[in-house]
Image (cartoon, rainbow, N blue to C red; front, side, top):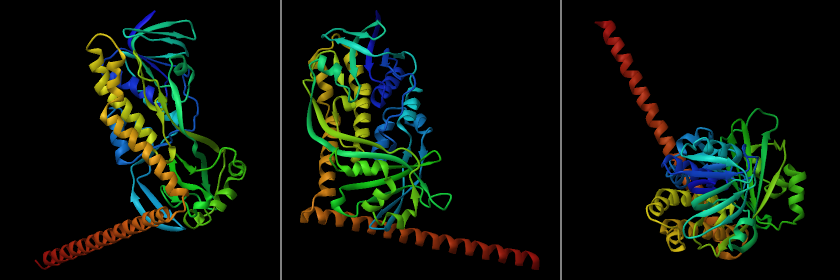
Length: 407
């Protein structure tokens, strides 16, 4: 039997980040996942925004990981075929398998990886026993369940899932290429829905290496024929749903596969148990449209690894009351509540036709327009000042030269 302090089940973003953090903290940790090389998975494809990056930096590995990503530096905002703003951007595009590879590269002793499946877990208030698919057994003080959408082990522990909204949203991912020109004019682009009846939230285009990646977010049923059309005729289907998009980006093609992933909103129940703690999607899932699922992962692992695990290991036992402090953590609870509220409100903002929601959509449009106009005005004033300063400097140099010649 192998002994360790922490056993993490699941080597996706939550599990791999936690293992990297605990290894850096000198805490003996075993990360268990069946994949030596993480396979392609249509999940997180960019890390973006000051808040999300701030949460990532609290894990201590952001600088190293983001060196593997593509920073776009500027994001164009558009709607109704109008370019509203060119915002400075902190978006980093990276495919999920590459992201996991970069995070795992930060895992160092005393943390280690074991490539296997966990077939059984038994928990208690003292030590936990894990049985692996290769016959090995592991004894750990704490099990961190970070296996995302998988439900088998959770059910065996008496942890259930309560679905709040079935197929709350659908994410669609594909590459885009310009037609008739070598590159798109924009570094990155977010284009919002033109008509509520299309049930499209927005499409975001961003570079990943030398590719332009597109993530389209819609609110439709999983058996909607529109999704089949999007899979087989993506350009025509996109043009019908967002007819003025080409005013901004020009003609385009979709050269590869179209990946489609429905997302349910759910929370876990019966999770207050001795010896085991749930993080990320294993605890609760939110809507990819809002991009807050990644915020939840970084918040969960940062609070767990920086605050709670060191405190738990300092005293004997691992009972349910001790572990409850993580679920009651005000930072975690605030992030969870914020994420769920955004998931609900963004769907209503996109598809509801009541006067309030129509007014909200127009208010957002006017806010983007106003922000863009102010930015263009400030940039124009700054450019004018720079030209005058350059002209004045040139005149002074010319005068100095004339005086020198006269002398």
